Length: 342
Image (cartoon, rainbow, N blue to C red; front, side):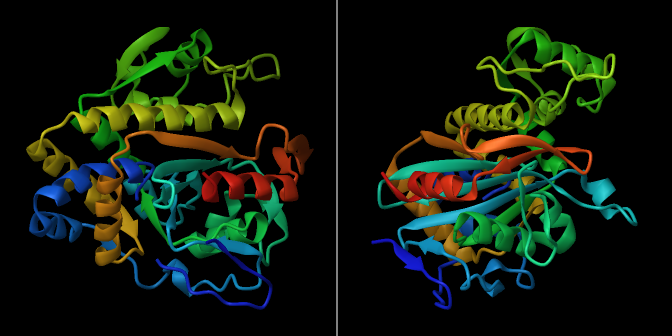
């Protein structure tokens, strides 16, 4: 039974992934079914964060919902690679934000994409775009911002840098994607694909390598022409940040399919590539229990959702920036229904 945390009430919640977490959980989960010792050793490769863990964030003043059978993990992808993140003075922003939900009550896996251009109230910092929360106060302020606006209680977080994303895609032999004409043109004519020699994608179905897949996931605007951005749309007609979130989910789904077909030895090799690039506040025992729960569920489908919902925002220009201004009440109700209901 879901419990609603009202203002002034304090509930203690329980505590993947990257922009890959649920996928990684399934890979490690199959290993877990074979041998707990090996999985436990592999999890030692993670960077465990005990300083900025989300259970230290007080969200009792916000109207949040929690359920012991529904686990929410905040997934963050930083918009700078490892070298850039370590360089002096390099500001870090949350380029990709998702909530991975392990719904043990209804035996479902869910992913909610959070549009970084949502214009929301950031506690202590006024109203700004959602991704500013991370640069202003790290993972804890990002969590508080999500809790205060949308009432989502988190059980932990996982953060990955984009270097790991490229390595994982290459390790599985690439991922399949179907590009529209505008997407292919955009990728070949811009620097979204970091290495110029790989700017040779085509229209239609193809296998993208790590650099191409990362570029595909980061498409957000087209080239600047005559003072306007030309439309860069997905096959379903989505553009801007909605198109970007859809591309990220499509790549995750494609990667998930590749990982399912791998052998145990291949899974172990993949885990050893990914885990050193992941930072998390989840405890090892909790991760292991979540992994086993995923394995027992027996499902490989990932239900997808995004905020703000299509009919729950207005596009506005604020301080010279294009913003998505959400109807908070409408979006809060919609995401709660998606995460907590069957």
